Image (tube, rainbow, N blue to C red):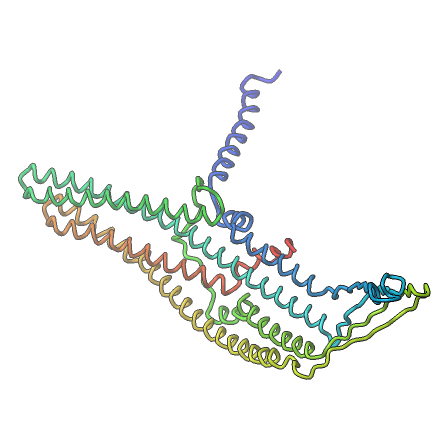
Amino acid sequence: MLPHRILRGRYILPVIVVMIFSITQAKADNELTLNQAYNLVLSQNPMVQSYQARYIGAEGNRIQQSLMPNPEASFEVENFAGDEGRSGVDGAELTLGIEQKIEIAGKRSNRVRVADLEKQQIKQEAIASIQSVLAQTNQAFVDIAIAEKQLQYAQNRLGVADKMHKAVKVRVNAAKAPKIQHTKVDIEQATAELEKRKAEKELTLAKTVLANLMGVPSINQAIKADISKLPETPSYDDVVNALEQTPMATMSQLAIMKQESVLNLERSNAISDPTVGLGVRRFNEDDGTAFLASVSIPLNFFDRNQGNILSAKANVKSAQAQDTSLRLNMNKQAVEIWQAMNNARDEAKDYQANIIPSARKALEQAEYGYGRGAFSFLDLLDAQRTLFDVQENYLKALRVFYKNKSQIDMLSGTYTPYTASLLNEKE
């Protein structure tokens, strides 16, 4: 029989492992990652579902345009209810026939081509819109992390204000400082409390924005994001080269192709379609029957569809001009966003590496010097406000960086893997 100590050791280790796993799992369940937010947006966001429905509707239109015209059945009665021998139906002629319009000049194939290109356009528009929602999700996710950091700064400010309040109170009670300093530090303490409440409201608002994007009532999990570790950014050349693959660029090219197909369709519509008919006729007068056949075709003397053809030609030129304008605007937008992103990144890194540490050190020196009477109250107050100002400016730089980074990610195709098969699965 094994000693009691060995038995206890055999059972304690598995229990510890289970406890660690449970704690880790509980922590993981209480954290929301960016990928999880993306997946919830793709599955629950109402706008995403609307874009998917539009794409399915476009497929329905393509199917409809591929169908042939329906045949027409006809029934005629002639030579009845007249006078003399035709007073009844004895001399009537009954005709039962069917007519079918025959589309020529490639009308149906042109219609299908137009509908197919329209479907592809809607697909690219849906992808662009869904990727825009993902970019908003990215920004909303980061906004929560920044709001949490802002709340942390506000809490630190309140702590510093409380600490300064005690230090000033000691000096005022010792008659080493005028009472007005006590009043001023009271104001600083109240201001810090207001900033803390403001930061709490902004955090609640940021969580509400993300919850709406994800299609959930609220967010209870903690946000797993390290905003202080600034990610690498793509080069300008990479961004410009990626512009050609964006859904907007593809959609613009499809618009030209669609208008060209519409022009082909209108040209084919200028050619009249014949209608053929086949029927059987019964003669009540002698109980005889006979077959009949017919062919009819409109004569294009006046309406040769010339107005629609002219309009279609103009639409082709318009689509080409819009494509050129779009590409110029996309390049201009990419330059502006890319520069703003990198400027904000450099600014944020400078705050991290130099400005905030220096401001924090200056506050520590001011607090120490004020306690010893080496610095004035204004020096202490100025050092405190300088730290809070540079922290606020640091958060502003982070907001600008991540906002533009989410747009650059959209232009450079970062969100493409999330939308690559989304619409195909719904097709």
